[in-house]
Length: 99
Image (cartoon, rainbow, N blue to C red; front, side):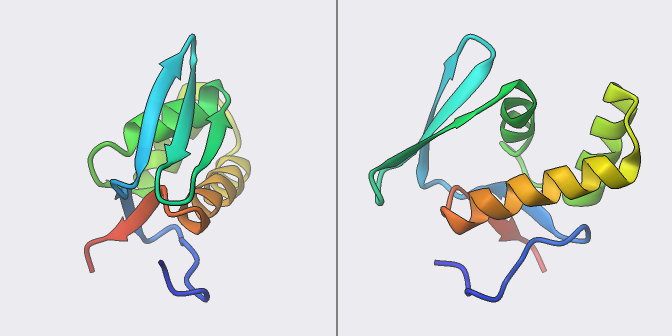
């Protein structure tokens, strides 16, 4: 379990934790934490973010890529991505990797 005080920040690198079972349904991904027995559904952009975490990725580069792809304001994208990533971390579906 991640330390209760840890929050993902823009400088972090994140990836799948290995504790989730994921399934693609149309454009959305449904996740299940097998240890906790809970499932989570991601919308199409959340699913895109999930798929990008198969290999470790820096949060900064992920946010830049999404802002460019969707022609969105970088600050808004960053805030939204950090919110999702921290929810995924809280449920142990992703992990901060590297140092």
